[in-house]
Length: 234
Image 1: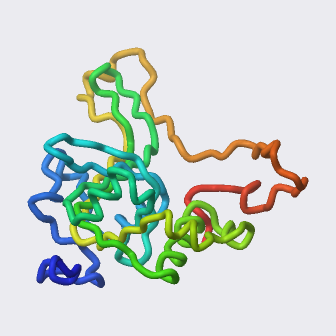
Image 2: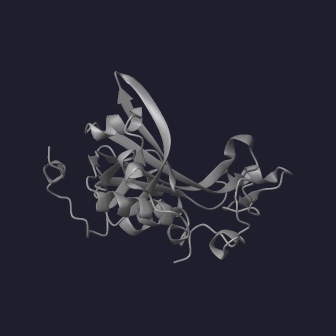
Image 3: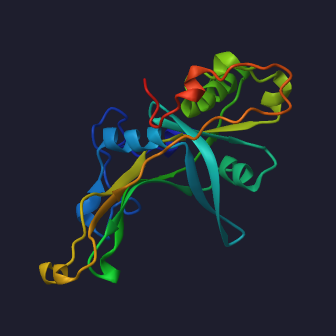
């Protein structure tokens, strides 16, 4: 079935809000729900590893994989022989999730502890990206999403590389975010306890680069690697 035929009549990529559906409406802690397109895209753009859930022969599977967002689509790639890619390429429905951990919330009670986070759920179906130029552009977007400037520093994919790689496009049609911020929500009476309470913020932190011993050239660490941060600076 053509991709356009699968999109709901209400789908409009330029809408500022995603319309909650039965599959994306946040029911548990609905006050944490966010359907704002910009917020959802910011979360997707900060991360680059997702978990993809799908069903094969009645058995559920969840597979971690890299992705990149380009406009109103997500792109996935992998071996054509992989169970994940074969299943998604068939048009089977799947769920993709991304979570960013922002902090540990310390409460006065054991049960009151929590975490601050930003998460996104995307429900969708995929289509195969065909053609040399389209696949090459997607591979460049994958590399640049992880680290800006890397594509120009390395050998681009060969024709054989592209033949051995399947690229899938997923229109972002059904999506929602869930975000927790702030401190513990224990009753005020709990704060008579002597334990420290507050939030321990967490963020991505790159360590010192390690040279590959197989490298034949002693190339200095480029600035985009030495100064790596997430989210990437634009």
